[in-house]
Structures are given as C-alpha cells and as structure tokens.
Length: 229
Image 1 (cartoon, one colour):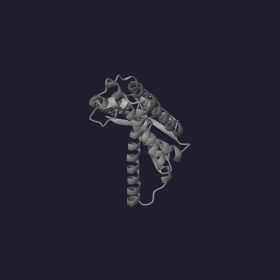
Image 2 (cartoon, one colour; image 1 turned 90 degrees about the horizontal axis):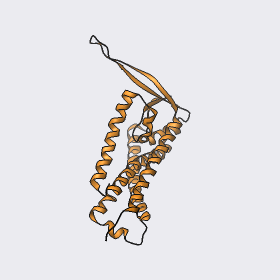
Image 3 (tube, rainbow, N blue to C red; image 1 turned 60 degrees about the vertical axis):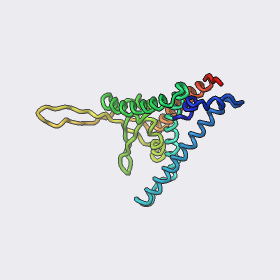
Image 4 (cartoon, helix red, strand yellow; image 1 turned 90 degrees about the vertical axis):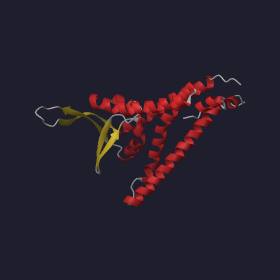
C-alpha cells in the first residue's frame, strides 16, 4: 500500500526519481516487487493447502490444475494492487490509498449481494470487481457453485478445464411474504444460462482490463509528478 505513496510522504522519492533512471523503470521495479511478493505468498498458501488436503483426505485429483488457480488468484489480487498504486500515485498519501482500497472492497462486498438479491443475478454484476452474479453447474460429483465476477477467476479457470462444455445456471431467488403467520415462500427461477467458457474468459478479460487501466493511471501520475529537490 505504501510502495509509492510513502516515498512521497517521507521524501525518499526525491533521490530516486532525480537519478538518471526513467520513471517507467522505477514504476516497473515496484510492480515487479509486488508481483514477486504476491506470487510467493500464494505459492506457500497453495502448497500448504495441497499438503493439508492430502494428509486429511488422502490422494487428491486434478492437482495438475493447481497452477490455473494460482494464476487466477494472482491476477485477481493484482486488481487491488493496481487500484492502490493508482490512488497512491495520485494522492501521494498512504492513508488515502488504504482507505480508498478498503472502502471500495467493502462497498463491493456489501453492495453486490444486495443488488443481486433484489434485482436478480444481472450479467452487469460480472463486470464489477467482486464475486459477481451467483450461479451453479451440475456435474457427476454434484452441484458446483460459481461466482461470475473477477474475484472467482482462479476457481472458474479450474472449472472450465474440468468441465469445458458445462453451462452455468444463474437463478433468481423469489421471496413471497404470506399472512396468517405462515413462513415466507421462497422459490428460485432460472434467470439465464451461460457456458462456463464465457464466464471464465470474461472474468479474465475484465480483470486484465481493470489492471491495465489502473496501472496506466498509476504510471501516468508518477510520470507527471513534480519532484522538488
């Protein structure tokens, strides 16, 4: 969070950007450092889950697809890395970048399920960073819950590899209030259906679009920042 903003606050950005090194190279260096940290963190987590799952449940299937999940999680996390870098480069404040990132994350976490509950699983929700519309696919092993948003990219890529011809059914929950002390009648109706390939590849495209836009903003703000020695 303070990769760029804290250097403006402490003044350490001055000797860095006044050296005969392009600001683009400085920006890419910070970006690469963030990528390495995120990658190592997820690799440790995934290895821990694989070892733990094998120890508790025995031999696991489809472990060759773990890199897809790793890739998806890294890309998803980089959406928020890009947002934080953009806000930090514009505001030059670690506090503002942290509040903006957490505020946006919590807003999406709360708003998307509420909108989905009252308006139904709209396709538009899948273009907003978050879980997106909630759906499910039917497999021989049972029903697999699917989230259409970019935050589920890792799981969706794995499901695409496992069930390439599957369709995702997005259903709307209907709640009918009844009088006389009766329990509300809850029913579900099919809203729409999409192939898992569309859900997975759209999530990938949306995630990369967010990353590109916010990283461009962060890079441009750093390029244009005025540095006084």
